[in-house]
Length: 472
Image 1 (tube, rainbow, N blue to C red):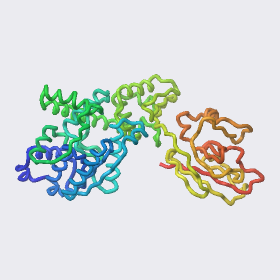
Image 2: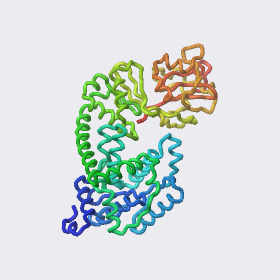
Image 3: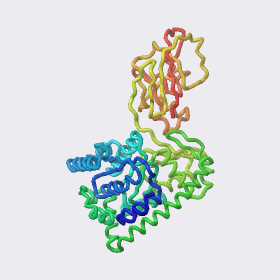
Image 4: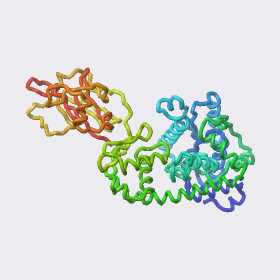
C-alpha cells in the first residue's frame, strides 16, 4: 500500500485511481507490467499514472504497441510517437506492425474483431515470452458504458452486461473508475502530449457509433452521473455472474460426458435438469474456456441451442457462426469446433510428422520383420503395407469430393463418402480424418481402413509400418 502521507499530496484523480487498483488488487509490489500504449490520450494518461507510483510499488514497466496499418503514415507516426515516449522515460518498447486488413480478409472477420485478435495475441505472446505478470489496457468508465450498451443491443445476456472486468487472467483495466472527462482534466493538469486518432470520430465502427450517437447525447441530457450509473449496474451484474460461475463449476463434471480437443459432449437429461441460467452459464464456459470463443454468445444463439437440446431430433444440428456446430445424437449434445480445410503434408519415411489440425502425429518406417512375426490385433492406429506397391512420395491430406479406395476385405472400389456412411462416421468429423496418399491412390484412411491393394502378400519383400498417435 502507498503511504497515506504521500497520497495526501496527490492529484485527486490519481488518488481515485490508486483506490480502484487497491480495491481490486490489480497488481502487487514488484510486479512486471506491460502497458498497452496507443499514443492516444487514454493510454498516455495511464502511462503517467503508473509512472507516478512505480517507485513506491517497485514496479517494472514496459511499453507495448500494435500498429494495425489501417491509417498509413498516421499509424506509423503514432508508433514512432510511442517509441519516443518509451525512450524518454527509459522504458523498454515492444512493437508489432501487422496487416490487419489482410488478417481480417483471411479469417473473415470485421476490422474491429480482427484488430482485437491481433492485439491480444501479441500482448499474450510477449507477456509470456518476457516473463511479465500482466498487460494493462487503458479502457475507462466511458468505454465500460459503451461496452455494456453494445452488449445490451446485441442480446449478450448477463455475461455481456457485466462489461469489462477490472482483472481477467493476465489483462488488467485500471482506469475503469475514471471517466473520459477526468482523463482530459488530468491530461491538462499534467501537461501531457498525445496523438489524436481521427478514426475515433467516424461512425463506421459500432463502438464509435455508440460513443458519438448514444453516450455523448446521454451525457448532455443527464450529466456525467449516467456513466457512473451504467458502470455501477455492470458491477452488480458481475457479482451475480461470479456466483453463477461458482455454482456451475460444481455441476460441470455431472453434465459433461466427454471432453476432447474440438468436441465437448453433454448428457442432455442432466443438462436440462438445471435452471436455464445455469444451462446458459455452462454453455458460456464451454465456448470461452474450451473453444476460446472470440465474442459473447447472443440470446438467440442460446435459444437455438436449448431448443435443440429440448426437442431436436437425433442427427439434427445447428451452427454458431461458421466455426461451431451443435449436434444432437439421441441423449447427447455435442458441441464441436469445425476444422478448417488444411493443406496437404509431405511425408518422409522414418521421420515423424505432426498433424496439428487432427491432433495426431504420424510416422512411417521400414521394418525388418517377417510377415509371420507381425501381429494383426485389430489396432486401427497401426497398419503394415507392401512398400513396393506404393507410389512415392507419400502425402497426407483431407478428404476431397469424389475420393474412392478399395477397403481391405472388399473386391471393388468404394466412394469414401459411402464408406463413412457405412462406418457411421458423423459428417462433421469426416474432414478431420487424414488420408495417406501415394500418387493418385488413397493408401490408408487413418484410424479406419487400409486399401486392400497395398496389403502384404506372399510376394512382399519390403514392409512399411504406418502409425498414428493422438496428441493433446
